[in-house]
Length: 493
Image (cartoon, rainbow, N blue to C red):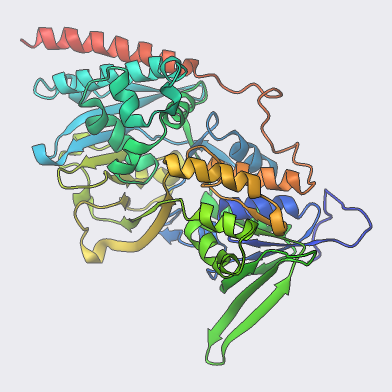
């Protein structure tokens, strides 16, 4: 079947050749955009393109592993990209419960989402408002959370506050001592898929910006209706050459007017692996940060110039690795059925990070209608599900944003393009290491390489971004809920 005409025709001169290594959201976005102007070779280690490599079809539904959700307000570039390629997405219910594992397994914090015109208003669960033993703790945390949403944007703008880590920021602004460990840290441990220790060292400014966007006027979480499979297929469609099942061994940036080289092996069956070494005009590395450093090690060890500077900067990033399980074992959900939420966080006294079990059937209408049985996805399980109930068990690595990482990001920005080498990924930009960061980093590289991305790129001066006024609406919703709770508590005495 002939390929459709390219809507972005290039000039008559020969196309430059670009290699993109890695096909997560950053690599796919880079390959998709660069294909508007260049001949792109997309190289992926897995046998299928990476962002969909671990997804699974089970119980009559296709499920992403890990589950990928986003919001209009915090992920504007991702949403514009999805719309441009025709990926449909809709509202997902990302409300959650928090279970204190050391206190009998009952939910001590839980809310339900009221979805109003794209805004997700978190309202307290009636089961908590009518629970005298748990209500005081809930009220204290709800008050602190409402105060954080309302006040933190102004607080972080005060002199010196924006440079603090999250733990120091909370202490400096008088938040209750229990607010971090009991609510904010577990939430962020799940969002950033990292340990509590790493959450505490996150730059406060990034966390405040995230919550301002998450609870902004378009703060409702969304999920692609067909999951990542459709997005992968449409992003990869214009790419001239796709190489899967390839183990990249080395990337050599260009030296003295030459071209960068990529070395990889493929195959590995009975006839042995086949080695490849190709020269390109530009190379975009879209792997995890640890893999990027490994690929650049041979060149860095032979050089004291820019190659070494990039290599050393990549070594400043810490990464943490956690497991995600897809299973059918309901014993990992809260013990009381009335405490079940779409997301169910567990705080264990011996755990270094929170655990969360996603009730896949409750995420959105598409999954609710498609799934033929209750299915769960657990990140960092406190207890293991029954072996026969496990359908997938995958480990993922995530970069951590701390002061050393922020300094390294500045160094990487200065080195972009040297030796015709470019880096994209969630770790490249100083923001939360989520899907939006990967997309935005790819857009920035495509622009630097002369690609017109005006139809994709979100520009704040050109488009009206949802403002964090939604946080004030959430504050009033929380305040109203607290008033109702106080009346109910008084009536129950």
